[in-house]
Amino acid sequence: MEIMFIGCFILYVHILSQRLKRVGRSYDRHGSTRMDISCETTLGTFDTMSWKNESPIYHPDFPGTIVPSNRTFPFYYTQQPSILPGVDDKTLSIVSPLVAYWALSLVFHALDIWGTDWAWLAKYRIHESAEVRSKNLVGKWHVVGAVLVQQAIQTLLGVLWVDGEDSALTDHMVQMSRMSPILVQSTLLWTGNPHVALSALQAWGSTILHFIYWWAIPTFQIFFAL
Image (cartoon, rainbow, N blue to C red; front, side, top):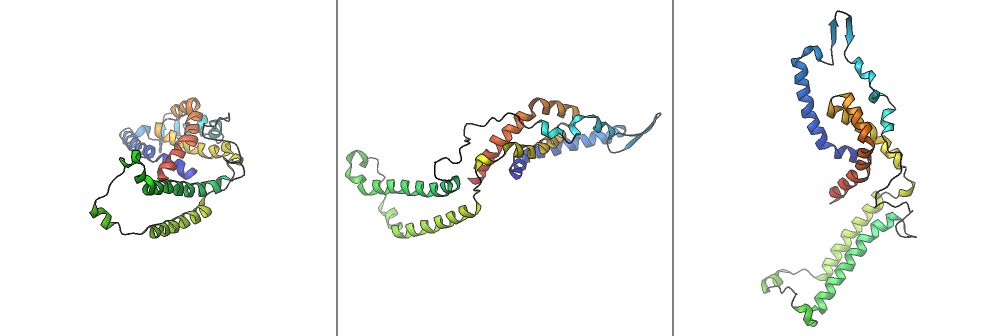
């Protein structure tokens, strides 16, 4: 999940890098305000990084404060052990594509065989030209064999890679708490000001983290799988 979280922030980090370049140039023009040097004043030498310790956002426990405390789940989530009683989700996720493929294929095969006998359906039939029929030289059993090989590989990969962990046993609060420090650091870099970042995270941190965990990451996973 952490990898998916980082992936969702690729564009965010790109914009952030451009902002940091501008901030760096600003610091170069005003050397007295640079954060990486010590300044000489009439009161003595002081480290300009010391102001960071004054903001609660740098406290090690702060990322935990933006983790949503209320256990609210999106509509697509279920706390049941499995979607279908008696069938674990791993088996269902591996078998369902196979069943869907063959069910749909048999429907089209039935239309191909008996569709000409149904007058109301014949007018919707696509009549291939003689040239197209002459090029379609692959036999049906050859196609079936190729599909079975492909599905055997697909099933094997599913058995090896699909996570069989019961989603009802996953501690989502712990998962989000692992992501919260990344969100805090990203917000600090984005704003360039710990006080602005603190205000933003106190106001919307929990909402943003909830959205990333339950919506942004699953959406990214779906499009990546496609």
